[in-house]
Image (cartoon, rainbow, N blue to C red):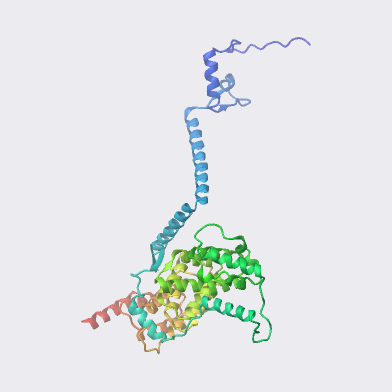
Length: 440
């Protein structure tokens, strides 16, 4: 075949570029992107095989690369902080502060305040003074029944074990179940570890407890009444994640609730790790309500205990169905100060409640029409919150019942606000004029 002829393109030369220009082009090749010539493009684009991007596009590319590098460094720093226990503590404190700011932004009254690793009742919260607590105690009567604590249950188990060793039989005439000696030794030693636990991983033998059929009996060997607050938080997180709602309810009621009440009774405030354990317990809402909140309302707990538990409800998200059932049950209970605090907190979360629950709340307040006792501020606050949130769902018959309730039980600062919500601004002005005339 004949040799292919060279095409002479006008404006091009076969000479090599100067050495300095070649070095400069090689140095710039890794810094700037090149534009490939498109087929059918203009003569200007086809004239140069390599055309570099302009300065603006290059600066944008560099800026994007810097942002990606910063994101990678931030992720690496976050991973390192997660591995550091000190940073975890700081993150949890920051998270708690963020939650508090959110609650304050929503306008909900915060019932507690943080004080050097403890959670105490806010002294400025209305309805939680000593005078109000005395009024609530007078309404509920003197109930001095001794509460069965976790320590009593454990001591009872120990006595049963001693009786078993002595050869005694129980009432049914059957010998009590006996755990292997090795299991008793292992979990007794784990109990000693948890009595001084502060941070770190839990023992592996303790992590398998939720999978045991007799986990409750084995758990008593570790003496939960002697656990540190940090150990209680880690154990609550373990059991809330691995137990079904019915079993988690048993753990909440027998172990967590008793430890929380004992700490409040001893220090008049709650350790922050117990407070975080309560927040973790809401991971199982049904177990939390049945194992902690409803038993507290039935046992006539103190206003301090109820306020701390209610502050947990303020800071977490709970499904509407579980909260509606809890409101329905609390409204049908005998009156207590704790029930008013719980009802006010749940109503303030602005759920879309079904009509039967609204009717139950109206009956709850209408029950006090013939009651001649002086009702505490907590009761009036609960009525005000109910009217503010659900006045559009209250029917005319229910409004008449609530009108009779307000005639029987009047509060100079709260009742006019309730009338304004239910019957408009005109009723509010008439109520204020009556108050002024009575004062003069």
